[in-house]
Length: 96
Image: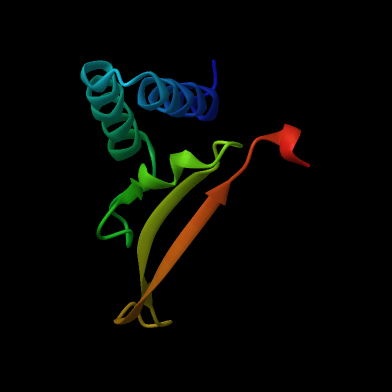
């Protein structure tokens, strides 16, 4: 299974737990998902704050995923000259 599939399945499990009121497993799935994101998605090498997933957005019936990150830019001399914040939305293919 590819990483994006594992993340999407874990997100769907969180949505299902929220619908059924299973807070114990919702918390477990959230912890696992946050660990996967922090260990497997961009972090370091100018992604100073790593990549995070916004679990609030999972209420969307299409289960879109929202990742946030900050990139630290360098000029041609390798000197840091600013940061930009980014939001990356990932939608299931069936949505299109």
